[in-house]
Length: 79
Image (cartoon, rainbow, N blue to C red; front, side, top):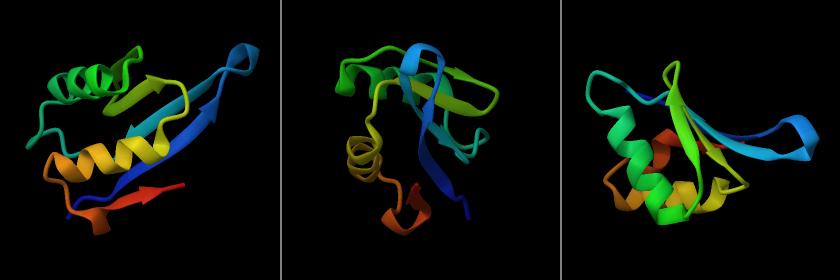
C-alpha cells in the first residue's frame, strides 16, 4: 500500500515546485510518469531520488491526472 504525497516547495527567487513522493519505483517507471505529467501540465520537471519535481504550482491538477492514470484516490495526499 503506497501513500503518494503531493506538496508545494518554495525555492530560490520565490519559485514554486510541485513535489510528488511515495510512488513505488518497483511497479512504476518514474521517468515515464514524469514525462507524461510534464506533457499534460505543459511544464518542466525532473525525476530524482525517488521523487518527481515539477516546476510551478500544480498540486490539484496532479491529483486528478494521477487518478485518471489509475492510481487509487485514497492513496493520494495533497498537502
